[in-house]
Image 1 (tube, rainbow, N blue to C red):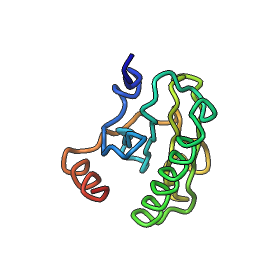
Image 2: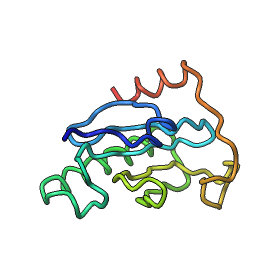
Image 3: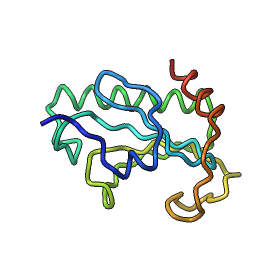
Image 4: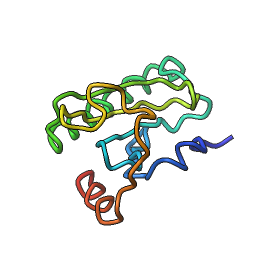
Length: 130
């Protein structure tokens, strides 16, 4: 059995890069710098489903992504969350939040329709992860 990204994540996200354990996805909503880490581990639903060595690798990659978001966007707050109510596949949201964003201080989920990124914006973000 090989790893396959959940259909919902395939539909809503853009692959930015691959790190040793995780795929780094961009939620295709330009209203927020919203990234998702997905460990490429078949059947993983919770971080505790990963072997200890992969848990360590996951947290290292999560910290790397968090630092990239802080350095690139200088947010007022960094939201990191593993919910999985709608998509059971293990994935962790990393969202740079600003007091000026349209949803502040509420959660970003479902408040406003997504505004997709342009191809140019996606390429710029990919370059910042290279």
